[in-house]
Length: 70
Image (cartoon, rainbow, N blue to C red; front, side):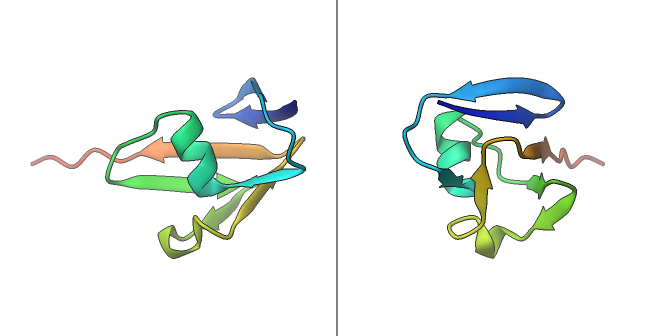
């Protein structure tokens, strides 16, 4: 079990891994928006790095979906 803070809410992820990637988190939580901003402990993660950027227990993660309009 991994405990993180996701968008200011404690989340418990059912995993035996010491860390997961941003891509894995997005899949677990079913985030499917095209325009996402992801931060781990306040550090922006570029979309190109979602497969390699890791999240571990205790991390504060923000996933913000941008809405474009006109």
